Length: 494
Ligand SMILES: [Zn+2]
Picture 1 (cartoon, protein in one colour):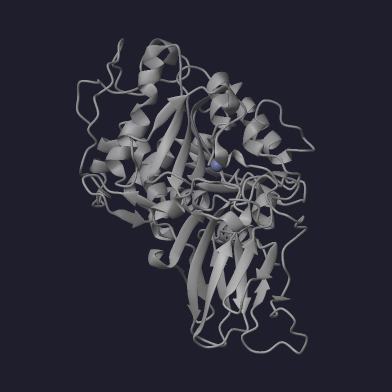
Picture 2 (picture 1 turned 60 degrees about the vertical axis):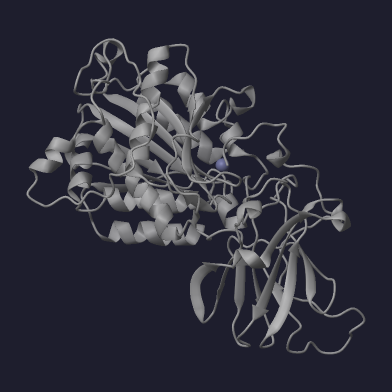
């Protein structure tokens, strides 16, 4: 979640755990109280010493019940949300109740039917537990903390079971993904290392565009996208991968987008936090999305690197930085939605709403109703707010949020839980919305390849923005953009 006020309970409360939790449990065997013999089958073994793992402590309450403690973010005990651990040495038909007892938040999608993820050795695809087995309540036994309890029955003795807050997406997975893209030798895909994290992990920067657009002196319209500044917000990576997969594809829309736009994507801004299994912070305990105003090259090197690049592009007269989108996941809201900025200039404010409205038409899971615009002081250090203040009046900066849990399709009330594929689909729809925004559709229609529409139904009930001034059809270049609108006539329905 990118956006929350300092006063909201989910901003992270006190340390919350009675005893300090130093690290992840490592093959910890939970033995019954007073038991001193050799561990037997059914004495559960917990482990979180792996990439993106998180489980700090296990207390066995009874033969059937275990209190589990999330390990707080490194160097910042206020954040305790992400968990990801394995359980093995189970007995067939062994029934247990796991209580996650030290969440740092009170509000949670667990109230709305969210359930933890599970997979096992013989069933390696992640599944959500049935919501009927999940309980979220204020517990008098744990300082009145909110506790999430779930019942589970182990069914295969030899399986190792893994439980997580949401679909994991590790740094290693991300590196393998980028390696596989590089191996395809696409002349419109470029990968470079923009910097390194404190623990020397790569800050990757991707450029996706036709090579002609990168020639010296060519005017460029740049779309800048970042993800995973908050490491526990794994849906961010699936959305980002959806964007990338679409943009490098042979889909006619992707080809037109590459011809006209330059996509710069830094999909993982906080690789250390991702690796460590943190929820919100970097290795040193910083919420990087509060340090855009003055990132330090040694304390926030990845943020510093990205900011330097953005400022360089901003100062390049041949580059028009038109969009900045930072992708997050939200722990209390449904659907995908956006945060934008508030401007004194009413016209700019109205124009800012165009992209989310178009996205809402393309993506059934994206809600314009939940999209909002603000300028709270506590969000001044976010990428969206900082760059919204820096860039000129034809640039738009958004936070794209997507629910950790589900979306509700217009006209219904049923929550559809997100899958990895559904997150990626949202990414594809974000990418293709640039086609509508820049009104490049006729170019696609001219292509000989048939173009399947991904979705075009249930247009959102919104009013068209009342725009003043020119109705220039083509987005203008940097030279004249201050004097004209860069979108279509508002009287034309989308
Ligand atoms: Zn976030």
